[in-house]
Image: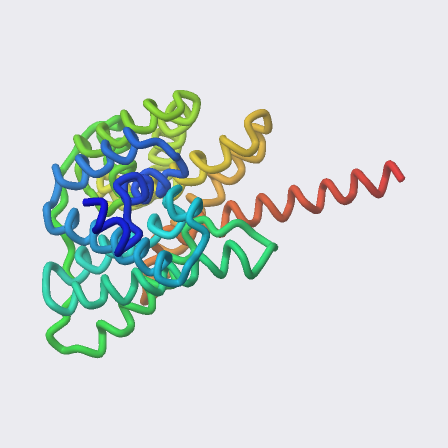
Length: 295
């Protein structure tokens, strides 16, 4: 095992942290809960997630990226999502596996760029979104690569909708898996776990108010971006509830606009990325105004 680590640069902690960092947590138990949740729902998706984690981290090691960042899972978390997405959209096929590998390499490179080559905004899951879009466009060139969707589990209650939304971050439409992921978040930070519940329920009710189709609410489509928003921002703006609530609402509205206009590419976590970026930029402008008024 030590020889394998020396050759590939991969460690168990880097792999597991790649899963927990999707939820912006550096906690091994959180990563383990997420791995179990994905496996509980779908072994092919679990395979895709490990392809992403391994390829993303190995790429970072080969390119001699910062070892501490690798250990924290910074170069694996977007790759994990890319690997899952390729298997989710194209089923477990040779093309899906090839796209998972290529997309994971690309996600690693995009993540490095966002971390070290620009200072305007946080990386978030932008590398995942762009890499997956590119892989979907490449996949569309192959006639045998047909987009498929995993079967959904019908749920009738608001709590079940909310838990399904948590799982949907990993393309897992299963409220039992969502509950397991939520447990992992609470094991890391109870405060963030509390906000996740608030965002999940709030997004479901707001989605209903906007007239969202019941099947999308059932699948947690209106929840998962809001959940990511609250996980990230609740750790940055702990005392600024206005920013957090505003970003939650904004992510839901962006999600709704995608559903209404039916754009050709899936929005994935782009509503989360755009909402957090906007809140950050607004906050920066407010700080500049305060400083200028003081001076």
